[in-house]
Length: 565
Image (cartoon, rainbow, N blue to C red; front, side, top):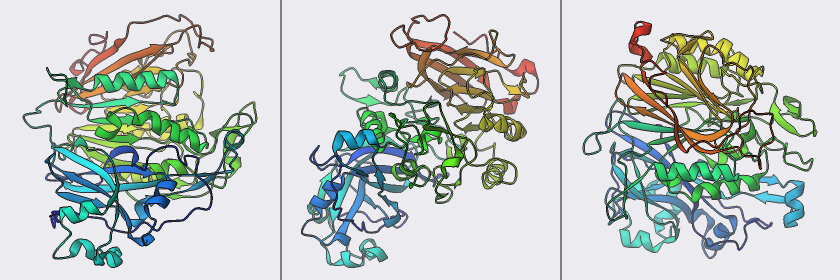
């Protein structure tokens, strides 16, 4: 029998299918299986229970094919899950509002390539697995179910799950029309807690920015995927001995710029690696994620789409509220010398949703800010941010981490006078200092920088550490503002690709590591850079830092230069 525990919050509803007259770009391309599986943290994280969101998609042709011979209101997406790999004990259905789908105009390049004019997205399902035990291995698989039980007609009133005699496992299995393989994830520790034995280890986050789908992009995530896992003596089973618990993506994921096919390409690339299905991802909105962008060959994105349509439909972050957004007039975007849009020039009408949100992961509070929604004093996001920072209990979450795409501090020339950066330093830095934020992660600039703890452009022991990790794969070639680094800069580089890891060792100390995965070579070098070289792979910057919350004087701070390699 499928266990219908009362404490588990099941979201139940029906997928109202649209029988599309047009042909999907992927018609006939692959089997009808869930694809692009990925994880994000749920909103419900407390001392006793945690939650996770499992997201997956189905091609439109699969939905049409699998629904043949059945009423469309009986097709339901779900995730089966269990703590036991031998059986499924729970099921989380997907609510109607969590089934996402959209159409978009194809770019001129894609029109010529396919002979079609319209892009039809996958159907995206975001299933909330709530009431999970903290720090526990959870097995799951994604399924598409045709409910043929008589209760299916009233499934929108949740009578299916409230029934005194729910479907048996055999009955449920017989109604599954498509399913993924079995995967697993490790549920996060409860609020304020560390991993308990037998894990009994530090908590580790990874940070990657400006990834794209280029050769260096693939090299970065391949290295990351190998680095996060260990293999036992038989070479068969991965475990979490020194693994990554959460991936922070600092924006500009695919560089689709409105080309929806590139979004699919990015998901295809990420899906080749197991981490995408096994660890949750947290994302900050980048300018190239807004669906208004340069598409190549003079093509311009579909301006009829709402801001960040793909970003909102394909992902589900731990939202405070549903997205509030509108169409963005073209006047809100600058043009580059080719005449195509590439950068917002003013704040966009986009609030909440995946734009900005917060969550707790064990002993850390994370606040994700949108660089492109107004954060000026009095704005919706600013007032939300003030409340989030004020409500943070540092006795429970001693580490406070912020992520936003555009960095408040930079040592690089490009974008240095951009309003999203200068205004962040003017209006957000005082909040970060007042609430003793530990780390501020960003991307946007295709290079690497780590500052000393900084306040008002000068090293100060209780200031945040600002890290630009924008060298994930798109480029690594930003020129410096000056020959000599600024006073607040500890490490900077504009020639190498990589990612960073942050280990929370205990409530007072953390370790930051920058891992190199590639470098610029004469074959792909296009910028006015100096000193191109081929560095050794692996760690290039490593430092132990004391939690600024516990720093009284400068002598209490670990010397950042002592830990650097």
